[in-house]
Image 1 (tube, helix red, strand yellow):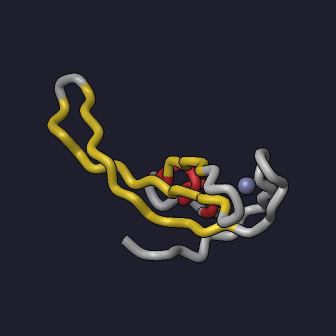
Image 2 (cartoon, protein in one colour; image 1 turned 90 degrees about the horizontal axis):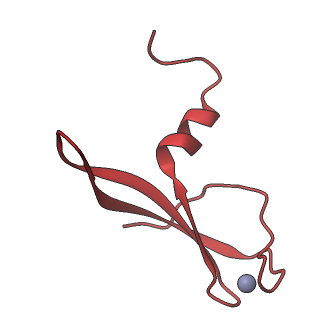
Length: 71
Ligand SMILES: [Zn+2]
């Protein structure tokens, strides 16, 4: 686990703080017929009040790609 540097426009909906930390977390995902896989998520935590938002890293990372990696 490490502290990421993901930059997103952010204002805490609880306290309005713009200060937060991001952690990358791997969680087990189970889909029918597919064996257990680890899904990558970003946990974004407000450092003022502790409110945490969770983002699916696959989607965030995909949105950063301007050109598709795969055809
Ligand atoms: Zn907050």
